[in-house]
Image 1 (tube, one colour):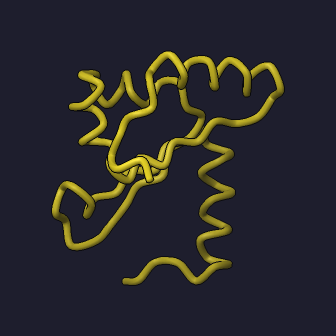
Image 2 (spheres, helix red, strand yellow; image 1 turned 120 degrees about the horizontal axis):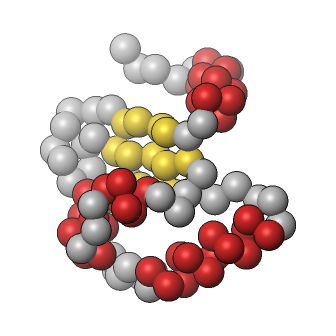
Length: 92
């Protein structure tokens, strides 16, 4: 178990380079993005920069009742909306 340990930032940058060379998108499951920002001592923008898409949770760490945000380019977000509906998403 990782136990909340951060992946070394240089390793993340190496993964980004490797994936880009092979034309594979790089996704960040940022469920605890705000805590990671403090741990890396980087802004959220800096933390998200290497990734093609980022998920952020509003209830883990922030204490919101529910909610999340998925970010990426326009085509990615449009496809995500379609799959959200197909999988029965949106609780409200």
